[in-house]
Amino acid sequence: MCSSDLHLIALGQLDEAANELARLSNETKMLGHEPDSALRLLLAEVDLRRGELRDADLELRAIAAEGLDELGRRRFEYHLLRSLVDLRRGELEPAQLERLHAEWKQQPYSQAQLEDWLVELELSAAERRRLEP
Image (tube, rainbow, N blue to C red):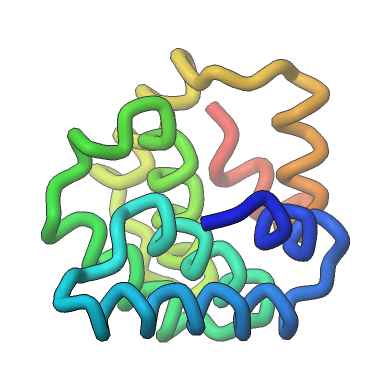
């Protein structure tokens, strides 16, 4: 994965980012491997931001099936995306919200970084109230 993928996402060029991430995923599969959790997390974020909740859900389920331990510092990202997808699908369970709140307390980002990301994810005021601890 290269930094240009992250730049495309940050610039809001979601279709281009999705195409590049899909290409990387396909290349990985052609080599006989499954995409790693970091790539799947980016795919899930792009899918979520494009309103493709089913696809985001599938990527997040694949990450969970592989195990969350490999995510390391990105566990917060996973739980925020998982919770937001579930909330937007009307399927947010209290246990998932508890996991998000536990990760939120130890998330590695500055308040400014976190705020920027929440803005990019286009959380509504109601979603913020529901998800923030």
